[in-house]
Structures are given as structure tokens and as C-alpha cells.
Length: 323
Image (cartoon, rainbow, N blue to C red; front, side):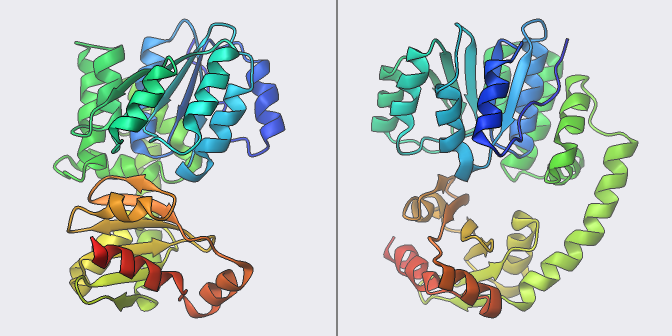
């Protein structure tokens, strides 16, 4: 039977207990966007009998969650990682997981160095990286080759995740899963090869109303810096991709940085350097879109809350304009 999502627990102790008591034989550790949800749907198509225990993770929490899984009993079961890139310390955690009895597979479409990939494979991990397609497509190719339903899920997901925007269904799904309480619902309809229903349509209508208000709020507080590039910095109130695209359209910027109040940021760029910039701020991603973290002190948080500015803006400009 297809299990429900078991992820989302913030307390590592609770997560460890849930992992130790799981009845499923596949643990899927993945991102938290549409690409992750699509990949999870295909995992559940493939591993219906074995059962799937899903952990949706932000990039920032990936390392801690991988450590939690690595410390739990593997019992010969499969740990499948998807749509999450290499991070410092990953190899040590993978080795610990292997020693605790996990079989490990990792599928990703972000940029890796040759050294990172070699170190992960040396740790005994089946690793498939393809930067030309979305992670869901890699999962579909590996787990459900030749399956028409899985291929269509991958096609729709890639349309959104790779910014093609040729299929209107992808935008709707991509925005609905940004509300985490709908991830399971979208995943479950994708398992059936369905791409819309009354719940999805109603939620999308609500999102559009909210999104327009939040984007306008971000734009009112946007700062543009730089000489080589026009770099926009804006606070995040929701919908980072849509906020960045609107800023680019209105202000003619080259790079858009959308910052959360905790210092985490999403970056989009016309020049293919987002991933290079993000790597300098404990992050990574793709050439046109990536994410990183400004290491906010308490005073940075206060200043950003009050003024919507931070000294880290200048640091990012220096990095971007040195590339």
C-alpha cells in the first residue's frame, strides 16, 4: 500500500524514533518543491509493495537530516536521496549510513565537482547526476523506464523546474506544493497520473491572490546595487521565483537575490553564475537559479527586519562582479 508522508518532523529525536519504528523499506530523502514531489510520486509507483517513508527537506536542513538517517538502523533497506546536491560532510554521513546497514542511491541534477562525485561513489553509493534534466526525470528513467505515466509526470515537473513554462499545468502544481500542507495531495494525484483536481484549482486561485500582494510588498523594499551587473536585493514574503521574475521584468536587473529573515536566500541570474555565487555562501544550485545563506548575527537580523538591508549585500556584489 502507498504510505503517507512521514517527514516534516522538526525534532531529530522524533525523526530518529520514527525511522527506527518504520515499517517501510525505502526511505526517500528529498527536497521540498515540485521536483521532489514528482520524484516521490515515482518512488511510490515503483516501491508500492515495499512502502516509502518520505522526508521532505530544505537545502539548509539536508545535512542534519542525512545525519539523522545515517544514525538510524538501516536493516538492509534503501536510502534514496534525490534533488539535493552535495554538501560538506556528506561523505562521512554516507559512510556512517552504510555502516548502519543502509543501501544508498543518490539522484540529482545540480552541479557537482568531479571530486565530490568520486568521493560519494567511493563511499559505496549508486550516484546518478544529470544536469540537463530535472531530478524527477532521473528518477523516472532509473525506477520506471518505459512507463508512460511516470514519463508524463517527469515531463510536467521538468517544465516547471527547468523554467521552460510551456505546459500551464506545471506552474499550477509548482506553486501549490509551495504550501507544504498540499505536498502529499499533489504527490498522491501524480501517482495516479492526474495533474489537477478541485482541491488544486481552489488552492491555486488562493495563491494567485496572495502572491500578487506579497510580490508588491517585496518590490517596495528592493535595493539595486552593482556596476558590472544590476543586482537586486529584496526581502522574501513568499514565492521567491515569481518575485525574482517580476523584479527582473520591471527593473531590468541581471541578478535577483530574495532574502528570508533568517539569512537564507534564493538567487536568480541572467548570466549563468547563480550556482557559483551561492557556493561562496554555503549553498549551490544551477547556473540560472540557486540558493545560499547569509550568516546573520542578531544585529544583522534586526537591521534587516527594520531597514531591509544588510552588510552582506556588498559581499555578494563583490563575489558576483569578480566572476
